[in-house]
Image 1 (tube, rainbow, N blue to C red):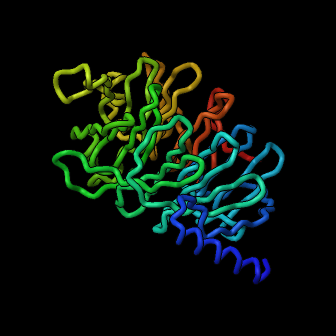
Image 2: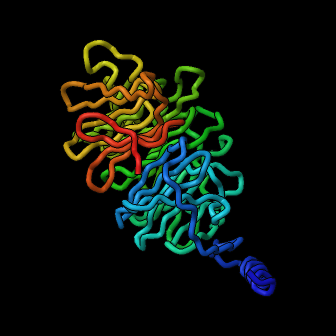
Length: 347
């Protein structure tokens, strides 16, 4: 890029800031992207996502993001325009643009329009709204209690209010939009928060605020089952009610979760990491070192995930556009379910 072009963008950024405009496409650094063609995924694959064009994206904590169109695997990192090589979250807007967020102190996400990357700087705000097409993304950084809301023009950095009677600093580990359009936030270590567009309601029961190992797990997963109950990777599932119809402030009731469903009290399942509901309405649960478990509403089925006869460290589960299931792992790439077992993905 020529010096005159750099000066132009620098002056444009200053003028935009001085004029008080709401646009947050600051620190603009659009790069024509080719990426590096590679033969395999990196070892740390935490996020799997398939876009509207059926292209797969694999987010890593170490080596950026990978794009797979069914033929070619391309790796993008900071040298190609990503803001950070750690990718915690991947989202897509109505126009097909892809957004990547990762742990960073500067409240910045990366937008990919198919040709170039653009860094989008968040604006601190109290603009809590609930619009159907807004994107919600995590900002996992040093218990800062923040999330991002992107309305297509502006990236808002919002700070969740603290729950009643709890004053702990916390991080937002998971974000989930329910079937009614409410947004849920899973935290570590102060529980679960629901935003309905007008107010915030918290669940701060012991099972969502106090975990083994001093609260290191947190609420990393939120899912609704076919009956509308919510599962928060804890020893209880929750039936949620409209608080306006209740006489008390408690808008839920609790029931036993997966760990007790087999009659054996499988306590290791009480704090799983990730959940998904498949096309047949079964729930699938990913544990850290004990494989994957399927719950069909009656029984649970175990799927060990091993390499060289040893259980591997899992992190996430994802359902793609066809309903196929994928696993993200800490050190062993990605896995795909073939109908009987999970196989390591090899392009």
